[in-house]
Image (cartoon, rainbow, N blue to C red; front, top):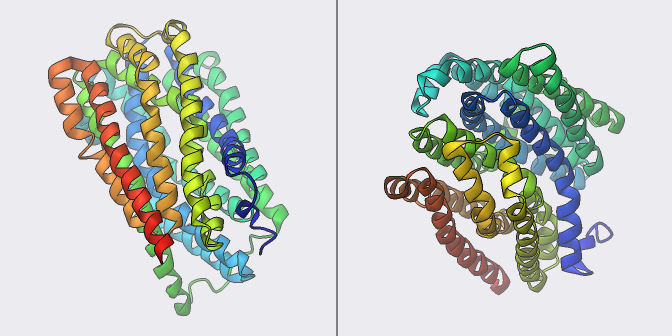
Length: 444
């Protein structure tokens, strides 16, 4: 075990940088394809098309969040049993989580397909955009269980310590999507539907690639007696981890849905600007998005070794690294702000929103980074409920009223001023609670 606990010695900052950078490679590939989707659609010079993608993405985030929560449970239980040498138990947990994912994602995707128009109306979609958004959304959401399956397979690879192959799976999906997007949208003339079908094809490619790597590892052996009564005891540990993880992940799409509803009142151009931010920021700050999962093993191993001093150092170094990274990227975005908004053809409110993000709001991502760091701490010291509370507060108390009053007094730009101010308050809470939690663990 000690030979595998490589994070209890050496430079913490080096561990943080290496883990964050390597973990972000696959994410960057995935996020870039999402950004390319938006770019190709923006070339059609219809703000309503870009807005339609934004509306659909907001709703799809709900299913994705549920799948992420279940994948977290699967990864934790499979990894734990593999470390203990219980390979058959790990396989059985994997199968049970798959059944759980299908039982949840299939009915959920069907319900969202049926009630797509109603869900879109809740977001405030204009009649001019409704049909396009609904058609795009229905193509993608009907096959959403494929994405859930792909995420499940990727989580198995990470549990097998196959981070490189898990990254390759994302790269394959990204390449397929990136190649098919212009073909389906422009060459075949499918427009917005073409982007949806390219996304579907990338999910199939992702599943096939993941199955190939899992087959090479000889991990996946179907459990023939998986439905026997004695195995129902597996549901308890799965639910215990999955429910808090799902609740934590669902908080973000709930907050995003409210923001989308408010910004929709300012028209498709404003929604297009918000959609650009939603796709550009994950690419620009992919390293920060990866940070929460990347520093988890560093915190966990040092906690296991009773080195709370190194746990505190991990938090400090993560904050320093995040700050320097965000400042560097934000400076780059500031210099290129005008070419970037021109690249995506943003006009009116959408252009103003894009300029606001590239000029001011990107710098404030530093506060969001602290929330990611605190989540990693809470999840690895056995305080997952605290992570849920922070994320729920962030999506509700420190988003909704701030966004509402920002829109009332400052228009479309006020929506984002409000979000930024709310992030400062939740940053203070997350930082304080994180420090207190580490101190309590150290005193035991």
